Amino acid sequence: MTVHHHPGLHRPDAFTREPLGWVPWLEPLATEELTERHYAGLVERQRADFPYFRLLARDPELLGARTRLDNDVFRNEDGGLPRPERELAAAAASRVNGCVFCASVHARLAARLSGRGEDVDRLLDQGTDAQLDERWDAIVASAAALTATPVRFGAEHVERLRAAGLGDDEILDVVNGAAFFNWANRLMLSLGEPEVPARRRA
Image 1 (cartoon, rainbow, N blue to C red):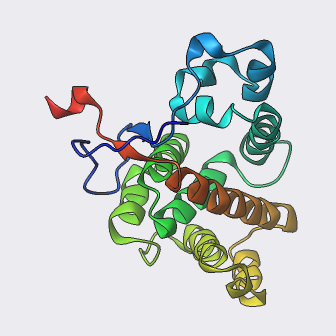
Image 2 (image 1 turned 180 degrees about the vertical axis):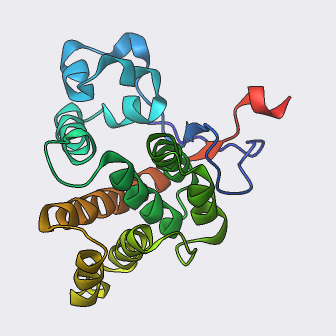
């Protein structure tokens, strides 16, 4: 497998809600190499447009498990935390980990679904100590603690989330969203890097 270096890459210089590209350091599968087994792992065929998923498709069974878990954590809205706040937890984890690409995706979704773009931008610009409101601050603080190291998340975080009005099922969704993206960030950070798309450099 070829390892690629990209000395001339146009890297983003700050966290952003703007869409970013992503450039792999290892060779992803070419679209024409994908078989039905690979598409089964992708779960959604349009994911083949993104080189990250074509790279993970080298192990389609593991990719399928990852994608189904991702979909369940973020898209299963049969109770639990509202979708914008699941995205907020993922954005907070990504901000702590320094995953600019993931932060852009989940911050954009949190802002669009909540209508609170200024608050989301404050999180991106100032970090997880930014003051939003008590409910969002409790979610962000919990996500940040879990991301730093799981044992840093404790009873005081659960109590703060409950005091902010979250039920047990919502607290579980905060934990799931932050924990999943803590892992996902670190995988993505080890395989490539974000780039500013050419259309935004003009």
